Structure formats: structure tokens, C-alpha cells
Amino acid sequence: MIVAFSFVSNSYANGTNWWHNLSQYSRNQLIVDKGAKYLGQNLGNPNGQCKYWIQNFVVNLASGNHVYLPSNALYPNDYYWNNDPNGHAVGMSIPLQYAEVGWIVQFRIAGKYYPHTAIIAGKSPDGVTFLDSNWLLDTTVRTHFVSYTDFYNMLESPGSFTIYYIL
Image (cartoon, rainbow, N blue to C red; front, side, top):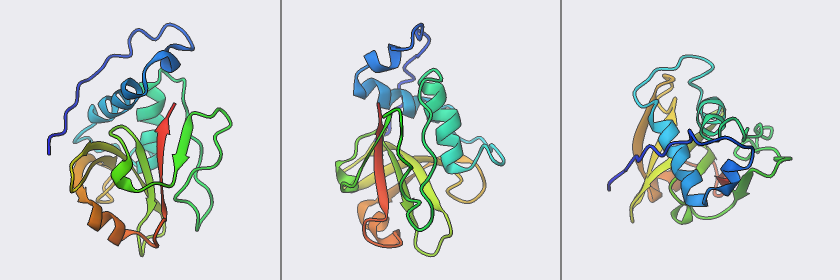
């Protein structure tokens, strides 16, 4: 599988509608590109927490401070986000295989006390490459491949994940 980072620029963000004038593909790519700029960095706490990093350092900055992701629902449903009053985060209960590069997955791992949040940076017929922070509980941004079988096997329960795309 090849994971490509194109580093699309958002330097032309001169108005409030620029983000919404982009195609969904371009918004997805900006999210991946912004996240990829942090690869290998240890961000410490709280910046390196998975959701905090995606919320504050990836989506918010990729969108030119136009999109801010909602908070998590309460346990045990914290694998999905609270309702987004601005309608920027569109959550779906679909198989991971149908998600697109640049979409975000929030999921509850069996035996953990917290959910995990990751950006889909690449896809293959066998699985996805996640771009995330704190996967190894060290607040470091990295990529790692997860097969579809391993993803479903690691979940706390079937369906304990939500997939989002960002408008």
C-alpha cells in the first residue's frame, strides 16, 4: 500500500467560505497533509492526545480555524462525538472498508478506558493506514497499518466506532 501526502496549501484562505468551496476530496487531503506535518513529533500532554491533536492541530488548522470538532459523548458511548451544532462533522456507522482517505475514525478498544481517534491516511484491500497520535501511549504522531480483521477484533463490541468526514 502506498500512502501519499501531497501537502495541498490552504494559504488562499481569505474568506469564511473558502473551506466550503473546496471539494470533499480537497478537504480530506488537507486534513491528511496537516496531520502528516507532525509525523515523528512527540507533542506531550495534552497536545499529543489523539482527539485533542486532531481537533486542535489538524482539522482546526487545516480549515483555517473554520472547523472545530465537537467533544466526545460520555462513556460508554464515547466512540462518537456530541452533536455538531455547525454541521461540520458528519458521523456515520458504516464499515471501515467504505471510509475514505482523510476521514476520521473514533473507536473504543476492548479493555481500554478511553476511545482512540485516528485519521485514515491510506487504504488497501486489506486494511487502512492510520495517522494518529498517542497510539503507543507516548503522545507521538505516527502512521501504522491496521487490517480490517484486526480493527474489528480490537473493538470493545461490534459497532463501537464512528466514522466522520468533515465538511
